Image (cartoon, rainbow, N blue to C red; front, side):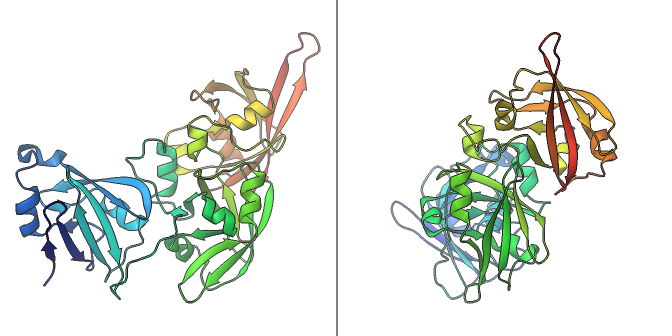
Length: 361
């Protein structure tokens, strides 16, 4: 029996075991579809039918396309976020208006327990997460993940790392020190702990200190990138506005001076767009500047423009930054450390700003 359905007067249910290839789509049982869904949608425009999925593991809502009785586009994102595997069982509770609450069970028929800290990706329906965040994290870049700061993980001083991220980057079956870098390259030390009984990987003894000193409060979303593996891994907090507090325009971490660390993503090169974070610009008094000089590793200078990128103070570099990256041997996935140099002009009391390449991180 491949599937079954159960119904109640208010919230009908159905369940499905996950078989090989389940990531591409999932079929709603015919009996359930005929009784509870068919006729409630615009069947003449089936390509536009979208169902919404929710779970107790997150406060996000996933929008998934429904072709006939098959869940397709968006389903893979849901399965990846919940770390679903062959042999797991999913139970769908229909809450009306094509909204389903999904409960997940492992092969032992015990409900899967999720830590509420981390999801490998964010939902495309979450409009507060911008396109740069989504493209940096899913699906091509397995070196990134999005972490949620919660009262629980701050109290425990422990952050759960998503299983797919840990496995893809060789962080399982080991215990060692790990370095956390903020947007500006300032380091904090934590411990990487592996629990053999569950197969889970955590950051311990350093996570809480990192959040407090960088003013990252509960409910914020932070995007991290593994910029160095080896015997002592290094996680870099992405400099772009990859958490809800920044996107909403709230204050983020204080500037750590004139140094800035940027992680270049495929999105930067694809869209020909590279931005400087608002906190760095404000801290160094260059919010009104409209040009900046890029200095490469050979000392060659290139003047480029600075243009406001959003309403929250972030500014994007004009033409010349891609050539600057090429000369310094920087490509997508690399993290670079830059130094801001301010040159005063005595005659008109104006200032010239230079952004000098220091090194790859």
